[in-house]
Image 1: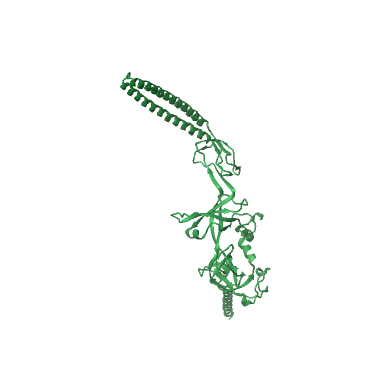
Image 2: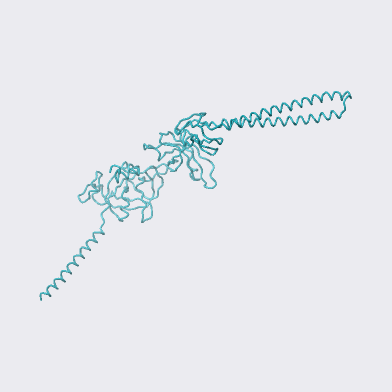
Length: 434
């Protein structure tokens, strides 16, 4: 009897445990399916027209930027400048070894003197034959000399004239050799062809160089140029005189101004692109030749449209379209409180909707882009609100409602202008201080 009671109690206990576990499991599944409402930031849209901007990447070059190459093959004996030195046209940059060239120049001068002497000798022989011809001609007229002798002297004169011509040609060749060696001697001194600043030095004492060795670059770094490639379509709308701004390259955060100076009228037959040259209005010193910079070229204005921050644009992973999340703030009648049921994450200075707000993803098309803003079509509303932070959470949770933290345009633009390293320090802190 006792054993039977124990067995019955054990069965009841086991059934109770299974029932408790089933209830706990069901409660856990139910809780796991109920995701919390997302907390997102939203801003009120604006309306207006944006300038048409073409963003391109180009190479920065100095005005009159040139490469310095030697004219002869030799060894460097002296280097007079270093990177960053300012030079004027005619200043000596490098001296090259000139011993062999001086010897060749002296030999060329000796050859020239010999050719001069040979020419004088040939001219003297010609004059003597011409005088002899005149005497024989007078005697022939008096029938005191045979005509054959006159013809013989004439043949000697022709030969003497040819000898003179050959001596003159040899003298000219010798003079050319002297001039060539004189030029080579002058080329042992490499001079600056223009005013500018020296860079990319590749010259050291004792270095053997030839005509393919780039020694320096020289350019006017106070007057910078940007060279960008334009497609055929771009070349039809971007014209000389268009204003431009450098997106990168300024350490102080100010955007350098530039102007489209010229656009080549010839397209490359293979790539169908052309080159545009932009003049930078002023160089603060942060722009250097060889830098790759991003530049915005303004070439007109778009039609009036809804204007939103670029951070409001979202590539929806499920819908497969670019659009925005619209927040129905009018239905809430702008009620902003900090409710007790909201988490600590929501306890911020910015007002937060006390009740959930309906949100909806709407595909849009970008008409024009400005710095940090975009003009869109596909929506027709005034004083509307769009989500700028938190779209990933809305898409992942497939949320149709969210709590909205209201922010202003200045706050959004500051966030968009943060550099990557600033964002890392903001999120993870400065590792150097750990």
